[in-house]
Image (cartoon, rainbow, N blue to C red):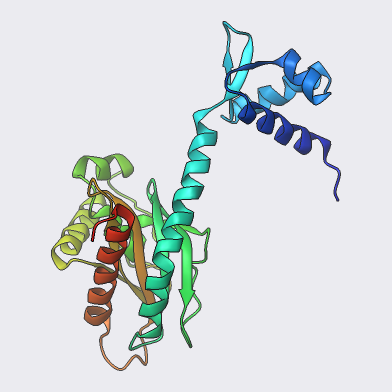
Length: 255
């Protein structure tokens, strides 16, 4: 087992603080963890700089920050979403008229983060692996979720109206182009992208909504365009939109 004392001591401090109901003094940390007090001060200073620990000056003590709670909550939320979505994605992939990859993503600012994936038989290899981040405005799942946000939030996510990031050339380059694309998405009921992430690949996506009509997740299907024997957008778009409705019902507990 590798010996990395600083990493182990940092984790020991986090674990100790998590076990206490209130802030803890550095002297207490040093005593209970058998660490030099100077080392404890160095560790908590770094953890404060990184946002994991907060200082309570009046108590001369330290406690965990909200960031730790947010990380834990986000992890539990994505795991729950994955468990709810995977059976639906597996059935859709198995019954798809063309080879597809199904993926589940969540919105992280102006990016999507992929949290689950189902690879169909003979489906193309995609970049949408679990843990990958991509610009939301270039992906079908991202566009589906952005389309459900109020205009003010879109402007906050894209304060620079020009020069939106591109990968392959296609895709919106300005906020105006993105807004028109999102309006089309809302009218259609599902989003699409064609070669914006990878050349010769296309995707359709839809958003699953929570109790407040907030896009809690995006589900999508990616496929290769040449050789599909027709235009699969409408068929796959309707199917992914229906899946998103079912996933939203599972998330909210609606029938």
